[in-house]
Image (cartoon, rainbow, N blue to C red):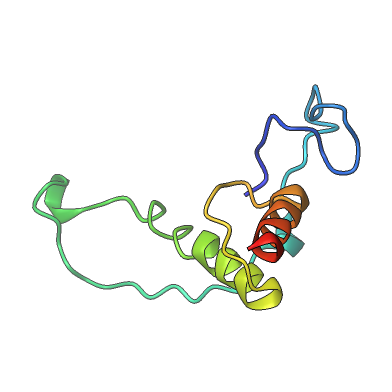
Length: 96
């Protein structure tokens, strides 16, 4: 949700050149998530094992996109969701 090569709003400068300037989510930006472990062995993994972390982050992006739609009434279907994209979509909606 944060990665882009476009300038950070409202500046016209491109994103940070190092990790001190790079916009990264922190612990306060994470949504509360309930993780439920289902004991279903996988035929592809050793001893039925599969990676536990791959599926944990999938619902957050659609949830944020739907929250933006609910708040402003326009659907943003390109990541990252930026203020510029929202403003462009609002202008396009107003123009008809």
